[in-house]
Image (cartoon, rainbow, N blue to C red; front, side, top):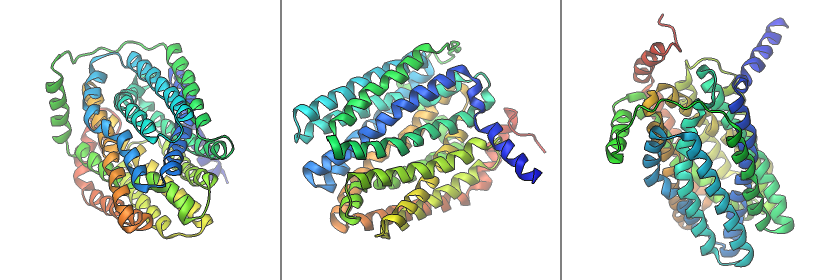
Length: 427
């Protein structure tokens, strides 16, 4: 009995240790409110496009327009994150995102049915996110009083992201059913007030900026050369790129499954997205309670495989209850894989190159998504949404096996860095 009690005590002791940092607490709650609005907007936008057009291809194209800027612009953002004040940059990107959400609410209300306006504004948000994501990812370490809490902060960051994934889509489903899509976009615009206020209340100690090279191209090349020359970072980027390219299809095609496969409504879409959020929270609870970096590479390999299996099973399900369970499994695999990869990248990267490494991570995570979205839309038009999702799940599983086959090389290089940084002891 005492063993179980000790385990539970250990779990909760480690679960929220990043909260000891005031700046991180502010960010956690402010960003959490904002993310609920973000998920409401994403679900409402997908439903709006599919309601007006009835086209799975345009669903894929809308996703493509939202993600494609990241493929080209995140390397520039990584340089900015390494050369300038990340705190001020993040305030600016959040203000721009609030303006975008307000514009989308107005466009859908005033010009209901003109989908091209929503797609254009989706592209605009993609540009904003291209700069926001790498800056926000590399800013996490700046918010912490104790840098050893980094892995916990990253896990908790994923926790609020997926708590919002649980709450936002469910609220969006009910809101769209009762009032239409516009209130979801309006709530998202208002939700940015929370995160902007939190950022302005922070007291950040300015970090020493050693990278003063004004040549952006040279900085970008240096970042890619550094990442390509270190096997663990390159292996992680490849795994993230493949799983992002393939798994984005579930997000894009979910309205098709909700309405046409499972014969449901916007509520059904909200429940399915909420199930992913529940699974993600389960995975994040495990990640947040970990106190060591050892073994994260195995977690990443295993969870990428779980992601693939979840997608394949969901694609063949015609039962709403089973579909919810398979989405739960998908959520566990997806977020555990990404959280493990994110933690390893931030830990393994040199401080003066972290922004650029995280920009490559975001390029793999979000930048590959537009091509996956477009592929999903085209492929589903020819072979159907279920077959498309099964193929994507299969390739996620295969990528996990390739990553697993190189773990000995990974550990050889990564453990040396962990030991040098005092995160592992040389036995």
